[in-house]
Structures are given as C-alpha cells and as structure tokens.
Length: 143
Image (tube, rainbow, N blue to C red; front, side, top):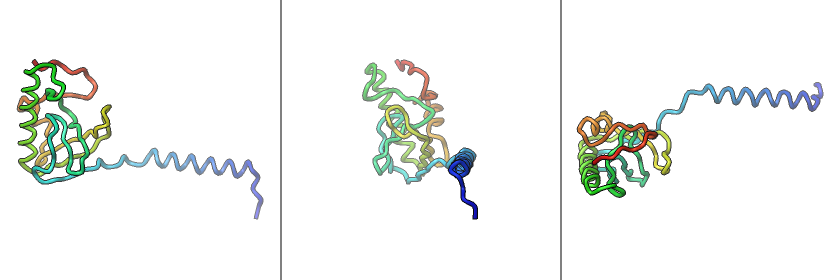
C-alpha cells in the first residue's frame, strides 16, 4: 500500500469533482413538472394568471391580456374582465394541465396551460382575448 502525498490526494480529489460536474452538465434537463386537474379546480385571477387548489399562482406563458387590477383605462378594465371570464370558461371546459417553467419577475410560477390538450394561450389569442407575449417586450395599450 502506498502513502499518497498531499499533492496526489488533491489531484485526484479535483479529478473526481471535475468528473462529477461534467456528469451534471450532460444530464438531460428535468421534465417540466405537470399538474393535472379536473374542470373548475383553478381560480382565475385575471386573463393570464390562475391559482391552483394548493395556492400556487401561475402566469400563463405566451400571452398577455388586458389588466383588470391596474388597468390604464376603464376600457382596458372591461376588456380584462372579458378575458378573465373567457379563461374561466376554458378552464371549466375540460381537463387542465399545467406545466411549470420557472418564475417571472413577480415570483409567479410561469406555466404552459392546456385544456384537453389545447394550449390556452393559443386559444385566447385566436379568440381575440389576448396578444402573443414573450415576457420581455413592453406592454402595448389595449384601448
């Protein structure tokens, strides 16, 4: 049995740490955490934010709707209430899947939301209740 010098021990410790880091880097990304609920389980906060039965607030990725709480005008507030009502209808119409995708600047969990497999953002945009939104561009006026 050989006695390792401090340098040899340090060298092999560094090699092991480097291999562990390399292994972590090349691991596949974790699957998005998905929650599935029946109709009517989520509370609609506004046209692009929902709250889970557990109290987690989700900002729906891919769309922006008019504001209801901090609307710039009465016209925007009315449009926001219409978007909220439409989102409530959509979520009540079938099986809801929420796939978490990180946090936004307000600490809400970003999520892709689907109803019966259909992307809620795409539906809301197609129906005229929302606009495409990448989370970075400046909000445009609604009225």
